[in-house]
Image 1 (tube, rainbow, N blue to C red):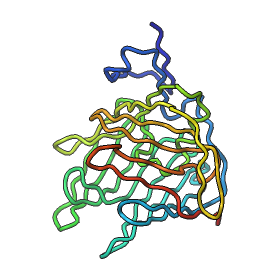
Image 2 (cartoon, rainbow, N blue to C red):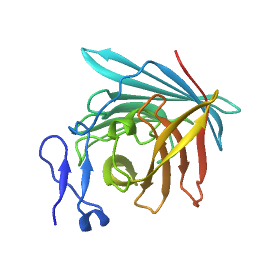
Image 3 (cartoon, helix red, strand yellow):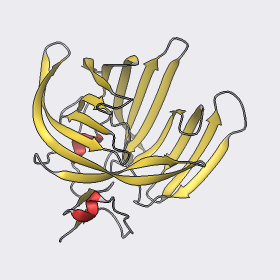
Length: 249
């Protein structure tokens, strides 16, 4: 049985159980199949089970390298939560993020990553000494795990029925993190309407986590790219995020 592996450099890949039994399409940061989309700065307002939140996306250049800035602003009764992510505009690798993070407790995480590993600092929200954690990645980097960015758009177009795997981060007990290949399938196309009478035809992508959680993502090749997400369908974290409004700056 043939195996298709796309990426940069040579590496050892630990395959998920299902991937071992299929002709497997693995897409890593820097893959030649990625087709990043040029766009003007924009802002999206989403609604979800946690209320409304804003997603602000723009491109910039740092040291002659093009980057994508993704800022998520989430209002809560006591504060405004800020999640900021930096993505390489060509490889689409997630290079760092600054965000509240709760895998190991109530913490703020200042995270830097590259193709070889990570250097993260965990800052307790309720007091205590920061904890620095470093390590090596299996899959030479990872994609944005939240997805509210142009990342999925760069993977498209893919035919309906395509099953592919991309690396995302997974926290581990004891304060470490790994990259794991997460299974996705393009399950269909659907036209969605949103904000001021706009509509677009989306690819519907099903994301299947190792723990059995299934989410669906509605993605298009045009800004604002990420139109809707139905997270953990039928599970304890089941909720939908979709667009309320959208504008270019």
